[in-house]
Image (tube, rainbow, N blue to C red; front, side, top):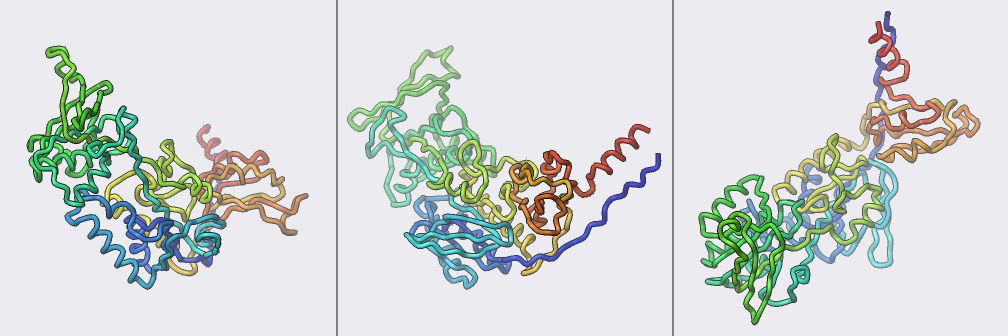
Length: 435
C-alpha cells in the first residue's frame, strides 16, 4: 500500500515579548538568580516580603562545600545586586495576583495596602523554606541545653565555646525525604569534635550521605571520634537538673548484650522539621501551579528540567522545591537564567507554529480542552472568522503550548489535531503496518 501522507511543513511566527524577569525571594537563591539573569541582558525586579535581603543563610555558622562564612557570602551578594543597574529591588512586597503567559505577564505587587501592576516576561520563585523546632515531640520542654540545628548554627556563629562538653545530636526523627538534615548534623558533629574536643554522639535511624564528599565527611567524623548510635524504635530523652539522658536499644548488639543503654549529655540537638516558607500555598494558587506531596513546589516531572513548572515562564530555584545546598542553588540559578534567555532572547522572538490547531467548524466551545490543559496554553477566541454557531473557538498559544497532545486526546468533537500526529497520519501508519 502506498502511503502518500507526508509530514507537515513547519512555519514560524514572530512574537513581541517582555524580557523583564520577576524574582520572588531575596535570599541567596533569589539574589543569585537575579545576578545570572541580569548578566544575560534581562532587566530584573527582585521582590522580598521582608524589609531586607539575605534570608536565613546569613544566620548560620558554615556551609558545606563553601570556604567563606555565610554572612560574608550574603554580604557579597547583597552588594552585587544593590549595585547592579539592571536589578530593581523591592522589599516589604509580595505577589498578590498574576495574569498572562510567558513573555506577557502582568503581576500585581502588594506593599501594605497598595497594589502595583508590573509587566514581566518570566517569573522565578525563590522563596526558600523554614524550620520548626518542636521539643514537645520528644517529650521535652524549652531549655538552654535543648536546641535545634538552626540554634546550634547560630550559637557557633556567635562564638559560643563548647570545649569539653558532652553533646548528643539526634537525626532519627527528622524527615528522611531531604538529605540536608543528615549532612548538617554530621558537619556540625565533626566541627564540635575537632574544634572543641567535645564528646559528640549522633543517634540515627538512617543516614543519607549520597553526595559530593558527604560520605568522606561521614568517614572523617567517625575517624575523629564521633560516636554513632543506631536505633530502630523511638528513643527516650529526659532532662533532669540540666542533665540530658538518652535511653535507646542498639539493634546491632541487642541479641548479644541486652539493653537499654543510657547516654548522658550536657546538650541535646534535636532535628527540626523542614517545611515550605509561609505563604507557599497561597503563592501556588496565584501562579496556578501545583505543590508536591510535601507541600513544596512540585519537581516530579521526568520530562522537564526540575527547575521548570507546568507553566512556561514560571521557574523554581532553591529551597522552595526542596531544602538543598548552596552549590545546588548556584547551578539551578544558572540553569533558569539560561532557560529564560533561550525563550526571551530578544524583544521579538521567533516561535515554531507546531501547536495543535482547531477546526472551528467542529468546535462547540465545550471548554474541555481549556480545563484539561496543564500549561494554561488555551484561550477561547471570538470573532466572525470562526465558522460555527458560536462564532468562537479554542486557540493554542504557541509560546506556551508544550505539544503534549492532551487537548487533542480529550476533545469530544475531534476538533483538535496535533501537527505530525493528525488522525490521517496515524491511520496511515496503522494501515501500513497491516500490509
